[in-house]
Image (tube, rainbow, N blue to C red; front, side, top):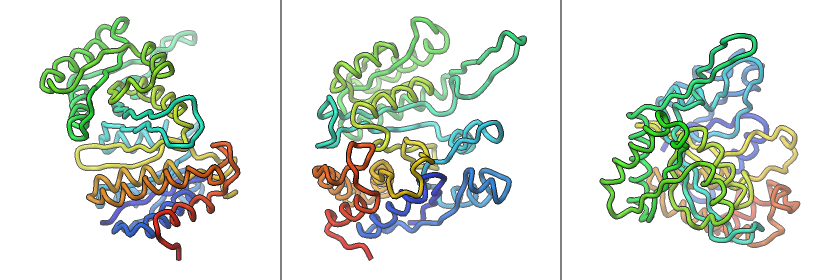
Length: 335
């Protein structure tokens, strides 16, 4: 199975190398085709995303990427957003799940956030009215609302999830959020065995902090999904533990949630857990479910010992140490 690998910037190359070692020890059949994008590429080629990246993704249909630094003052608004737009990767899926022995206020958190990825305010439709007035235009369509909400319900059905919560601010934005909510109500009727819940985004944020265990699958719009995903990460220990994937009809790009962390790049301090959990999502989707399960179990076992926690988790373990411990707990050896 050929998979495009985009290592990215900052800590990206380090954590991607860690992932490659772990997948090799795991016995995965994935073969990586390495290309790159981001700030380091721009310095050499005067473009943030070379054509070879697009060609590789279009050929392999599956890619996994490290964090990429968003250019400031020039280039794309976000390279990640550009890839999502180009390939219509409409579903951003982020599992938020507790890992034992990671110190937080909560236990047994297990929710999945489905975020619509292609419209809403993140389309970047802005206009200047005058020097003192600027408008940002929010776009919500029935077609794109239907496909993300249906994807959330199908996921719930496949994985025996009990509830789907739709999150909007439809009490204020009655046209845009109202459309998203009404589409959710319509689609929910086709899934009578799955509980359907409606919540406003501000209430959702409060409820996530008060009792995150009440949530199962959340489906929401682009901006709300971005904010709630980071809030969810905070509930279970931080961005360094959260995997993710952007899916379209025939292309998927897997990426962990955290940024490129240039301040610790090259210092052997990065936390590889998010990219490894992201790899486990990929393994699930390509038919290597047993290996994905084995990888997640190894991560949990490794995290049981606080000596294996990196600095962001309150420890002092190095990237290399965690990588070796995870391989050891797989029962494999690193060559």
